[in-house]
Length: 348
Image (cartoon, rainbow, N blue to C red; front, side, top):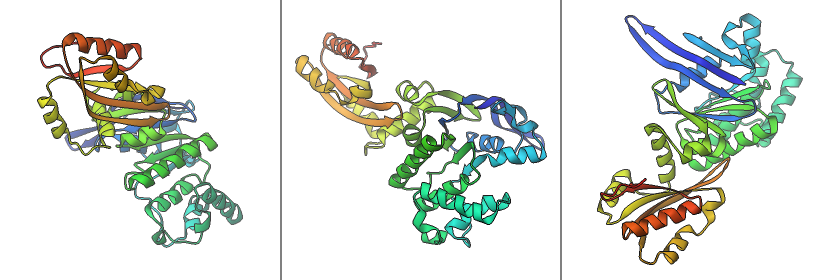
């Protein structure tokens, strides 16, 4: 288990203090993929350096299986750091070395005999799907293949913890999904704890069980991914969730706002969970409430580790009584609804 306990990191520059991390608290259970999401400057990279033992917190503790990482010294610290693997955004491969030589590098530094490090590298290249690329050089690989080499290298010393620091940010959407699927598979096979650092909610939804949202050095929200998607509390979390649901459309926020302003009825957002996402809810509403006109603004379904989550924005044109009946009907189906535009009538 990884535990951040009141962790703060302050950089002193002459008379100026820069607070990179401010009283950070969260727990990552063993064997879980945990997402840490935030925009640039949120403090994510500083937390990575602290967890990797590259820097020391100004205050607080980072415990790995109840051992304070920053109380370790010398050989004990080096051994603990060897059990933390890192995957980087820009791969950080040595261009003069072949694929297998890149994977063997951490083992070479650790003094592992050549025969053993070769065997281990071959096993890892098989795991990441690059068994046929052992003698290739990085320049001959695609971006996704380079990242697979980076993952294999990060696993060389049989780490207990794998840190993925924006590992998919430089990849196209299809390759991103492949790398995320690979991380989920590695997590399942090796029962490895993975900390996924990202600014992409898609990566969190696809790979993670829990997530913490970071802003200006603080953890502002955390919980199960499905709960955070369904009930985002903070403005930044709502922004991440909305961007993830809207990325399937060509509708900008300004265009959507303009359409909403021109709407004649009430705009209602429906949230579906699990099997609800495949039910004909809108069709049922149209058939049962014939005095109401229903227009679909936009909708999307996203898959998370806990199942599907769907979001649908509807315009309901009709009397307040009919709209209330619809909202009550949706509640009986366990479909959550939120009135986005009430046209002067405020309803919970």
